Amino acid sequence: MKQPLPYFNADFGQNHLSNMYWLFGLAVFMIFIGLGLRDPWPADEPRFAQIAMEMVHSGQWFFPSRAGELYPDKPPIFMWSIAFFYWLTGSINIAFLLPSALSGLVTMYLVYSLGRRLWSNRIGFYAAILLIFSVQFTLQAKTAQIDAMVCMWITLGCYGLLRFLLIDGLWRWYFMAWFFMGIGVITKGVGFLPLLMLFPFALLRGFKVQNSYIAAPQIEGGWRWWLGPLVMLGAISLWFLPMLLLVEHSQNPLFETYRDNILFKQTVKRYADSWHHIKPFYYYVTSVVPVFWLPISLLLPWLFSHWKLAFKERDFRIILPLVWVALVLVFFSVSPGKRGVYILPALPMLALVTAPYLAAVLKHKWPNRLLFLLVSFISVIMLLAALAGWMEIKAASKLVEKYQVEPWGFLATIGLTGLLIIALTWLKKPQLKLASWPLFIMALWIIYSTWGYALLGPVKTPKSVFDAMSDSVPSDAELALVDFSEQFILFSPYSITHFGYHTDNQEQVKAAWHWQGDDTKRFILIDENEVTLCFDPTKALDVGYAHRVHWLILGVESRLVQCAVPNDDVHQYHLAK
Image (cartoon, rainbow, N blue to C red; front, top):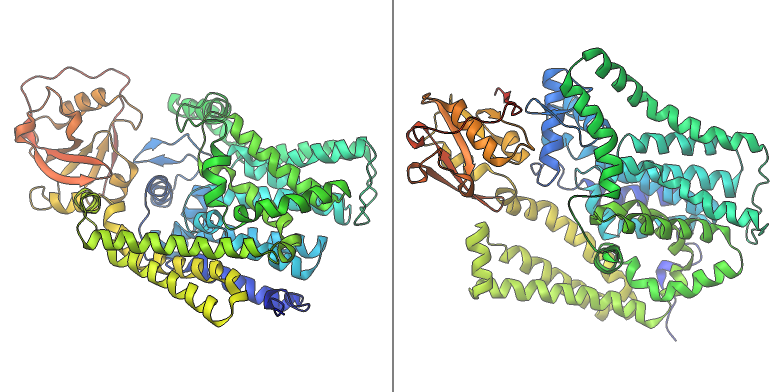
């Protein structure tokens, strides 16, 4: 007869203090390892890091700007947090990752707290562990995008509502939920999502369905329900009203454009009529959830029966968070513009409603086998890719030629580590097959956050381009950027001039030609495909390949005699070094 799984002994995870030590120790280890070892990487990190540095250096914190150009795509909350840590530490390589890392820790604790209050210490522990070992959660906690922070605000909103609706009925939790929804809105527009949880609650209450598992509080005071939206508006106004007043007082058309862009184009229009990242309705279900919500996604076939029973038995602890997860998926699926990170806020609540059934699910043979096979499959694929590289198979050789990186030792190490974990968990104690995923994902984050950072650094930054320029472009030269990404501003050792991030490329080229004039210390960095009749490409200096573009340097010797005048609305922005 098989021995019980040690993860599910009666006393495992029941001690609150012990749980806190384990959870925070594990989360800090997985999330913070590698902090300070890498530079900001595209797509979003260099932008936010550059904006934060400009805030500190210029003293202009309220209106974010990149190289002098106002940045109206997002409110400044996330950039403020990076700027604060940059001001505090003096290191952008530490500062840019701290807000997401700390947001991850807070989110994990909130899930643990909900689990222990709705069920038990052990269920809270399982919920937090599931979240930590989920691919997307830890990945975003180690990435300087806004999504980890907005996930924290949304989880705080869900936490407040669930504390209010299911645990103690105290109105302070209700108002707290609305307040953090407001903070979420001014971080990234979707911060209001927790209010979707009120729809299933209102429906259940309207049909007078009683919660059969816990003694839900009797909530009275109908008029106070309507104070919640006012609290959210109050939180939004902390940024919104000063911004409007400053724009009005400035009488600056650029600030007015900033206001209109951030209020309309980057909110309503981005959701309803998105202009990029266009994906089909089913994108999240077929392309994001199966991979990025591992290991929970692998357990879904066995969870459905438990969730169905919870609905049948009217367990509000499952119904409210699970319906909310479904509504969030529908909300983001309706919008034509989709990115995998958008649905991150649903993952903490999914971990919460998975945790009560984890022990029962993992008593089945196939969930354990699938976790075991998943680690085996990934390990073998990594090892085969490494062997293909060492054997100089054509596809692998193209990768080296294109990106100038040889990851074969890195991939082989991951593959061999995974196979070693498989061997140990199988040979020592076959019933520990389920431990293969936690051990493998921990090893993966360690290897990625150290060796992987060092390996990908040259690929993820334009340092090689600037190194190639150093022999031909003097250190006191000025550099104009055409059709650039923010990382070229962040890493440039030269004073930078550009002509508007969203300006038409041809207009940028014409503006750069006129900017350069006959000054021998003015150079233009440009994509080889953007060189026009304004310049002679045969006299350009090739400075290499970076970020999927072949880059050229244009000096005055590349200029043709004439070039059309740019449009009047092309602005020039400058950042001194």
